[in-house]
Image 1 (cartoon, rainbow, N blue to C red):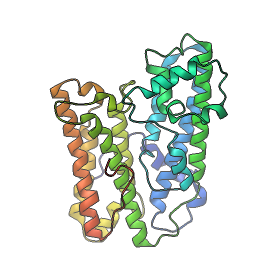
Image 2 (cartoon, rainbow, N blue to C red; image 1 turned 60 degrees about the vertical axis):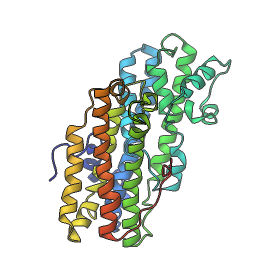
Image 3 (cartoon, one colour; image 1 turned 30 degrees about the vertical axis):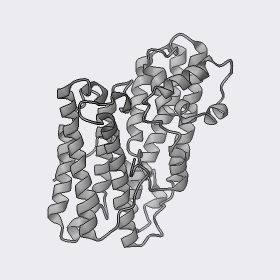
Length: 338
């Protein structure tokens, strides 16, 4: 079953696979090639969206149309969801990923740091911003500038100038990540090693997405809404839907995708279960309220927890069932034991 909403924003990436964006990789025959193309295209898309955010931020400071730059910020954040939480891939891309997003911002660290740099009697350059904490150089700082009531971006020319520098730095880092994905990092792996790496890639991203829910959900009756991602813009649930769509794209990768690997090894029922779970999660995922808003009531908490259970089921199927059926060992990621 391959229903309509295969991907949310990531769908365009697969469609672009034949457009030459990663042309030099298309002639290489390796089991990882389909997954690599999706990842490389996701990195290209993120770079393009970050570059557009850079342009929109500069335009905002000239004409003050905040709706356009907010829309582009969300497009950039959505593009990042395809790469978020990865522990596998090119070393340079993984090294640069830390600078893209600070989360969770449970103690308003971003707000405090942004207030400090905006109050400083200093003309900020891209180089200077790149030496600062991730709290002031990533997507979270842009969100604070665009959505937080304490932001002075609409009234202070110096704040707007600093915002353009932050946007330029973000775009520059996105360029590094896209360049790092210019070559397939998995070509030296044999088929068994690649299969383990592939499942670990999916598992790592899934576990990161689960953390984005489990931390705010915390203990029943004592949620921690400020642990939610993008709580200022109210887009946390939309982000998570993008995460799920991106993972499903990887699972159904053309060529030697995990869905085909399972079916080729006689595990059609398991493949159907995973595909169905992805489809159900995407089709029923609520995006009309943010996770922050849901956690303000008992009913909202139950709705959020029901979504978390969908991810739990995916984790069981991929991390446990697939690993057992294919006889591979799943690597641990940075969130384990957290």
